[in-house]
Length: 178
Image 1 (cartoon, one colour):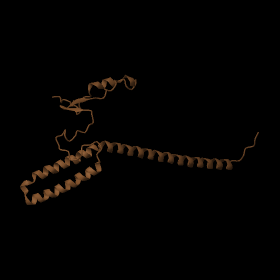
Image 2 (image 1 turned 90 degrees about the horizontal axis):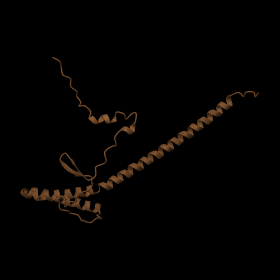
Image 3 (image 1 turned 120 degrees about the horizontal axis):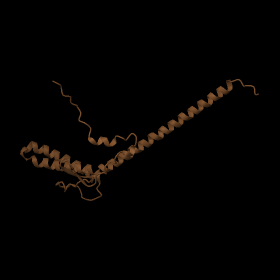
């Protein structure tokens, strides 16, 4: 009885044939699909390409900090942090004195954490810009340092070549001219 052969990997998708002449003619490959704009379905869920942080109200959570556009993030984060510390201490007291009444404090702490999390998430675009700026500045600094290193090596090489030429010119006997 003959043994059936099976591959451990599935066969390649059929569209690989579209790229068979790519080595000879790179323009023969099909263009990539256009980027998705708007909403799309993925594994049964609908997503959008808009990068918008939903508000706390949209998520059904009460907002504990002011609803203005110009929020002092540092001040609000400190306030929420102090409030969180206070609620945790109150939770510890309630657990000691009246253990059956802890649920309300846990809900309050959860609300504070959600507000802290939302404030931090609203800082993500600023963090991304600052990180990108830092990365670009460090790249520029590394490149400037590499250029300076190359210039220094070039000057050293030119100096060595000049010394070598002087050594060669000084040690060679002069040939009689004809």
